[in-house]
Every structure is written in C-alpha cells, then in structure tokens.
Length: 75
Image (cartoon, one colour):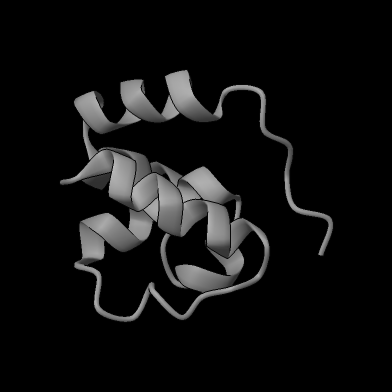
C-alpha cells in the first residue's frame, strides 16, 4: 500500500469527495474509510474490527501517526 497516496484520498473523502475511492482494492478502501472517518459511506457492510484487521498493523501505525488529531467528519 502506498500510504501517503491513500492519505491524500482519505483527506478528500473526509471532505465528502469519494471520486478516487472507486479503483482502490478492498484493503486500500478500508484504510481510506478508517482514516477519513467515512466507514458508513465507504464500507457500510464492514465492521471497524474487520477493517482494522484487514488493513494490518503497519498501516494502522502509520494511520495513527498521521491522523491522530483528526476529528470525525461533521456530515
């Protein structure tokens, strides 16, 4: 996974722009959904526990480092 690239897509998704999510793999989409706080919109049939497990430890550590101070999107 190219995590900086996925962080860019997650930032757009946080703002409600999901255009770049379509071609992502399942693991990449779940990373973007978790990082952006858009699980309901991007992975409505997956649990957070499943997403965390699927994304993996290394990506979750990166996500925590980059997104730690981010809030849940308003809408």
